[in-house]
Length: 102
Image 1 (cartoon, rainbow, N blue to C red):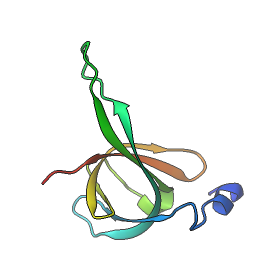
Image 2: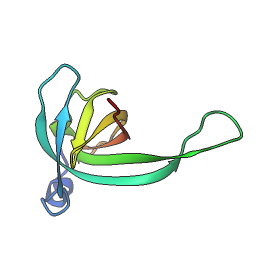
Image 3: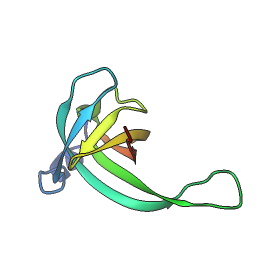
């Protein structure tokens, strides 16, 4: 069960972006997320560490029940692939995203 303080915190003002979540082989669902894009180091195992643009979307865990790596989250018309799933004990999940190319 989601902690009371998290429920109070997760208002429409915070979850300000509407996204389209599509599990592989499933149907799309509109959800509310807190979305950011940031530059992060991408380790390739060598001395050179390039940087890449990584998207992050935070949302209620119940909105994306069953999410798997490779599922799609579309934000502002841009499709992203779920690269990493990081749930916590409060009912919140952060998805790490990479741009999906056709």
